[in-house]
Length: 442
Image (cartoon, rainbow, N blue to C red; front, side, top):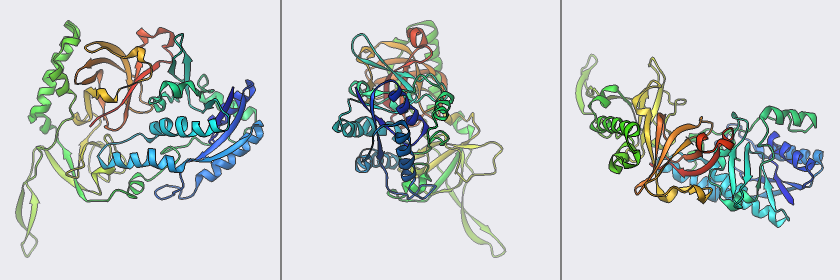
């Protein structure tokens, strides 16, 4: 078996290469350059050049051939252009998931095969298991703090078959220890941060390469809005009915129309500000201001709703509150950003998520849920989120995730990754199997 290791210059891929060489594989390394521009990056220089230098030293230390491939054009077309498009529509994409599906285990895999490789290995903290039926399962890595299976949730069976994850059975501390023991040049290199292959960026500056800045209002939403809002009050009523159904009878029989209603994000279109004239100063000049509104207040201005994401706290430039303020919704068409004060703000949480049927990606078809059936699962809606207990219910209008606990900042454009529940997968309770993923719709 000839294996190409995607050597990034980081400690994880370095140890992955080391382990494969020790295990007797025919190994070679390849460094991929996926990005040239520095506009919007916080360092403002070409970090990839330093990474390539370190990767080459690691390959020399281990004693394996080293190659270089430029995939920047494919990366721009398949990942960056998609990212710009999603932000423009008011969604928050996950470029790392796309990078793995479209670049590392597609374009990079093709380049590796041209050099004779049968498999590609990476430094991801996850595990792969071959099943008796010849299919492959994707499992969490054993290190709960570093598991990266979420980033691989969009891979298909052909990609998994060609993938190797040598450090999936190790913890980060063990990887560092191995790197030091064998004196690898990347042993003390810090973990990369930010967008995959782009690096840590000032996101608004990065996005402004293609997205225009347009000034709009920042609106704080008060609790009074939810007390008076028909949609919110009806959702709370339906939610209580749903909880009763879960306790008393088959939740599969719960009305699909009510599930769909529960899955909708709250609309803030009803918060409208009327204006009034008033006189100010010694000369009593006429000015215009918003009338007091019990549902909310205009806090200030922003440079474009597309630059904000749900749950965002930093970089808002809003002060004067007892508790932190968070983005609870954005309206790209009207260029409005809605905020709420406090971590328990009602606008931050939802209990039910609907996934589009056409977006469902089963890693193994054996887990496809028949129409009208349900399954207990655990779900992750963002990287490093602890797995959340939920009921997965297949309906004609979509796949519904009914969470045991309210979920904070369910963000359109991110991926929902769904894992087997521990009770249904006792063999892998410590490293659950990822069975399904889908983009979270608006």
